Amino acid sequence: MSVLERLRAIGLHKSSHARPMRKWRKIARRLRSEVLDTARRVGMRAQGSSLIPVALRPALVRLLGRKIGKHVILHHNCHLGPNLTIGHGSLINTQCLIETNAPVLIGSRVHLGMRVLIATSIHDMSDPACRSGLHSALPVVIGDGAWIGGGATIMPGVTIGAGAVIGAASVVVRDVPPDTVWAGNPARFIRSLAEPASGVSDRPAA
View 1 (cartoon, one colour):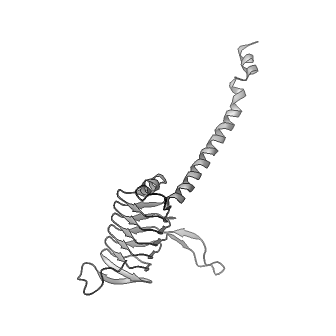
View 2: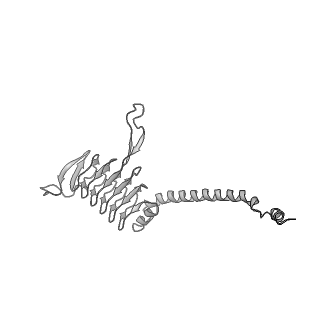
View 3: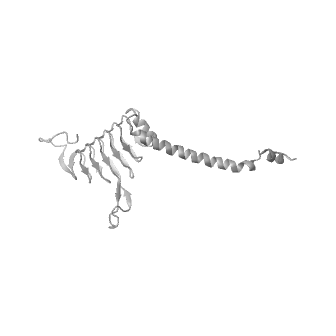
């Protein structure tokens, strides 16, 4: 009996193992994909959990693929979409929802109050049979040092300039220049922060 015949007889010839090996590699790839998907889902739930210490939450969010700067504070019960960048020293307060079907860029030293909503999704409204039509998305940018008051909503495509302040519960539908105060629904210009306050409260954002 030849060597090849002997190998085949005991099941060690490569041809006898090629198909099982391909099968196991396919199974391994599928398992890896399922494990990673499960880890992402668990991580998404854990990132907002009050059981995760504030000091550990930025590291967890980084592991999930978000770009988070140094000394960032992320409070619990927040939903942070995957296409998100947050600069150094920013604070995201509790129950914020940041939807990222388009990129969201939050600068450094930005403060988001409780329950802030940042939306990027829009729909085509031209069809009367379905006003929530074809989906698309627009990016949102919040400049360095901005302060977004609790309960405010930032709509798709909006850029908020550096040092701007948005009043609590405002709905921002257009770009906000740097160093200005805006409030209302829809948000409107209140005053420039480069000018004296002249009796206007310095706590519009809460």
